Image (tube, rainbow, N blue to C red; front, side):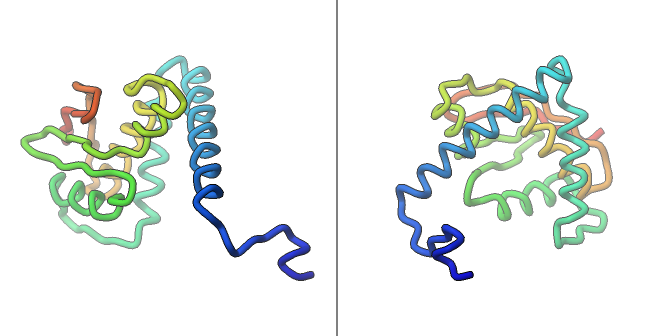
Length: 151
């Protein structure tokens, strides 16, 4: 069987990437909405468990890492879709691919997808520093801010 028989096309163009982006936005919206409905709005445990699982799979070791060090590492790793920084316990997201996907789907930022992502992010950081982390969304807009603390 050759590539032509499988429908595989090695030459993807910008239109193909745009279609994939729209499809991923749709799937993330559906996934987050479904989890939100099943959990009655309390998606934090699901996100944290998934985040801790992701942290175990990251090829990094941060023995004795601080919250600042873990967030700086994630900022570098996630830089193609997000720009964020931690300053004085305030985690600020400038660029956010999920915010862009929410806009594409015409859903409000700060909703189910954002809540699920931020609890997932907390779970990753928890897994990296071996301490519970909790973020609370304080501001939503062109930039989003969260109060973030190690418990």
